[in-house]
Image (cartoon, rainbow, N blue to C red):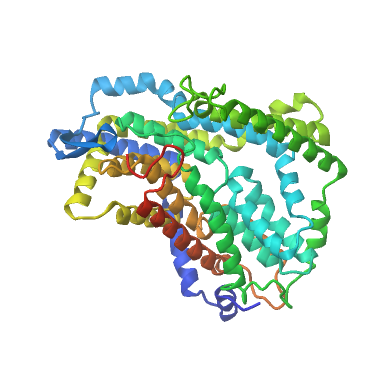
Length: 533
């Protein structure tokens, strides 16, 4: 394998320019306070701004979109002073309700509990291993990329299990294990915005979007399906892009058959551990049968015009029991699929173990709950101050006055999100910051919240693989080291960056081009979710 920048730096005894830049990014990221503290600081800043701006009489007069964007009217936007006795007392008294009723908290907890059952019963891990083992090299590349791209569907399994499993399978078959590790890592991180079906990410982001649009009085369809068409197409485009990059740009750095590849770096042990037992196979078959029955019943209750999950008018959009109950539909599926797999395979000895599985799922996201504690306050005061309304009005007027088209501005938002992701990798945390600003900003010129959310998702995913704040980097370095080629120098952060950058750039180009096509032809991003309101 070719020597990369990181190895050259190690041999020369000095850091390369790339390493120095990455060190600077890491230092900047570490300088940021914890998200909980960050949201509290922002809440304080918003309170002070509301006082200063309201007393200064700051206002903006701009054309505002009305009637779903079909009409415009001149509106004066002012700031509401929140530093008053009545407001602060009400904020303290109503805080428990503000926290508990916060949309993302309710939806996230329910979905996370169900996914914890499927994950801890072994269902998700067994599914990944069943799909990969026995496939040909070319199909392995496609399958690994496809499963990793759909990593949202598999919770943390994709980024935790797939890289070492892929390396082990490639090594056991005599192929370059680094290629398998890289494909699975890139797919599970840089392509995190794409899936073929709706996942908890769609539900959680839509919950934030719904909260913002509701607070700001923006009339537009918001539901977990509103980005589905776009992300479904993205799934196949990114999968193909990753394989093409592997066969062209990376064919020298990550050749399928590398004469220097280390094929004994633990691969035989891992591949043995990856073999499905008869009990696991039996459990997967049972879970598969359940899936067919479950989704068959779901289709029976949704597709017919008089279906139980349709609205009284016989429609699905804009609202219906199907859309309103989507969180519970996903939750029930993962819970029962996990239970059936666990009971048949023997991993779930008793239903008495079920509450512990669910509780561990909550434990895993306890940090998220703490963040929501302060985020709910920040979102509330930001909404009540009407600063978001003013930013949206002023920004929209700026775009109009300087003839900055919405498409160019949205591409700029993608780039801004990509850059910010180098410092704060948590997707939901950043959306809690971005949504109150950019949704009203673009809504003022008629761009739908579905477009803003999709724009954010593109930028939020692309740089995940090269983010110094990525908690998985240490593990990925360990996987590369386990199968380090003969004569290769020190494996470090630079190794990952050099291997990941070509994929990251290619995925960025493909997704931005896809986005431009969507905007040019005004294609719907999901059911009932157009480009403009």
